[in-house]
Length: 173
Image (cartoon, rainbow, N blue to C red; front, side, top):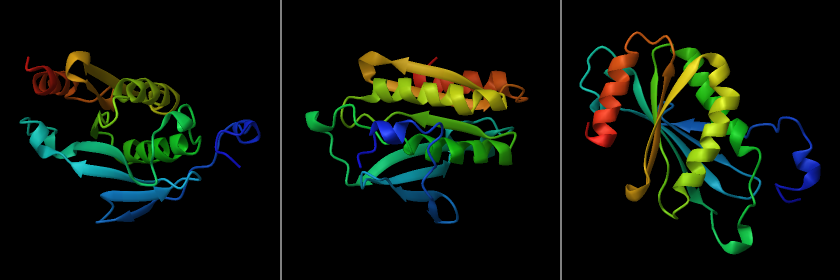
């Protein structure tokens, strides 16, 4: 059965894939029903901020297809509805485990669909992270193909510093 079969999509919330972690939880792998093996990486990102008050809680999150992924016109619009609850379930878990975490996410630019990924991830954010009180600061520079977001709790004590630091990093301002 295809992942976007109407029978599958009638389910209110598809179940997430099991994620198998290695490297002390820094890398998680899962394989989709479309036989795509994904890496969900959580990289400690102290270098992104010079602010010692929160830099040890900065994490870059990456979602990268490792094998089985092939984008062609034939697969255009085909998606696996279980990827969303898998990725976002792990981010919800991360935010629930650390009220001071700062997550940086930048969209993959390998096939010129970074803008679409940015929009999709924004919808997922609204559905999963916004209800937790997580806010999002979006950064985009279409001419440079940069689409990124920084996520942190709305009541983070260093919210202003986070926004200023990432604006400098991503815009040079």
